[in-house]
Length: 304
Image 1 (tube, rainbow, N blue to C red):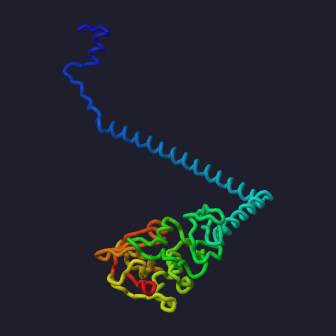
Image 2: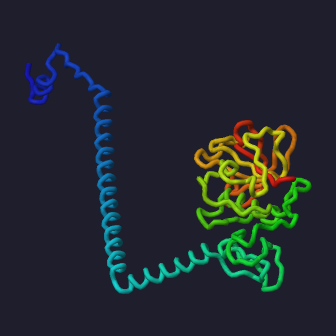
């Protein structure tokens, strides 16, 4: 048999009676794993770049802060900086002088409030609802800060669940001693003066023991210690033990609290005037619930 070159090549490539082996296809799982690994590498690279950028931003912020601090210190140490500090200190001292010592009075029978509390809008010789007569009006100073033994003008007599003297100062701060701002103690001090007392200063400073630490009997007051609900009367100063409950929550565990009873209702419910309570350092009315053992004392004017 004669074969030309073309036939020979075909026969050589596909010899007769010989099958061509099949090549097994590659697993698709290996391709997926390779793609997944490549994606993780990309994510890792992105995370490294983000961390590098964050580190750079942090260093820039630190550098800027240090530069700012250096500039501030340099300014403070300069003549202009020292002058500025002196001016600020002078202004602060002037402000504190008015805040602590009070402002001038408006007439012989009228106390002004401190500037930070809002000065009474009254001219000399004129009355103002914001300018309350306290005592004989012979002294200047803070609201309730002096002027005789107290008002005693009848405005402290409870009537219809209200005490007029306290109604007039609702929403206002009373700071008798000028220390620690308007505390509950200041309200008790101011009110006791209105009842004719000399004022309460010193002792332990714990409002819960005001009834225990002063000679109330010699001042013309009765004190009922550890009272029952039936002992409460409108117009009483009411003192709660440190940590005692007012029926809603436990009071300050170190100093206790003090207020004035405005009205006694059924079931041990009382309305009170208090300062430095939920509404802050102002005189405000509250509703409380008498809790036996929580009240250390009630204080009232003899004969009231």
